[in-house]
Image (cartoon, rainbow, N blue to C red; front, side, top):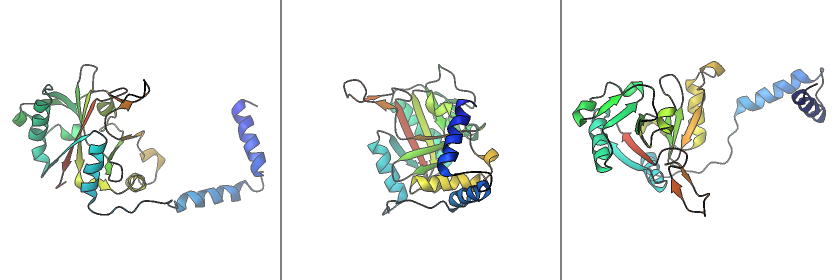
Length: 221
């Protein structure tokens, strides 16, 4: 018996599991998971978009709103110019056909490299309670674009802003069809720029990821 089997055997023994009651025990577990009983949740008052923007700014993200997706390139171009950042970026495939040239930007949908300073992504949903972005990785939504570049720009649909994290997980379950094979390989929660206070309790941004997180909220998506 290897270490893993030994640990599991001890757990089964402590729970009183045996061949006779395994099926009923499994059924109890399945019923509990299927019920998805919610724990205590805050009651958010007011508009979710307003709350999300306020909480995001508290986390040192910057936030802008646009009326339509077609407005995104010009807004991003202005942001990059204000930050004195280059006009080259990599993006998720779903944004490749935006009119980036209108903002004099060179944006390509490809694998991110070590020399890429700006990554443009969407997000699965956004959480109003904490100002957090929820990103699900996949072939068309690679996580690296939000993690490797120094500047992460996230395009967020206002319709995909949910109240709390539990609502985000409910969306994942609903849109994956409940099948394990349809679930994202990884889910990342992004709450502002990367930071650490390990050295002399001094907050440093960009410690393990982007120095900047800029969020563009699209109202009509």
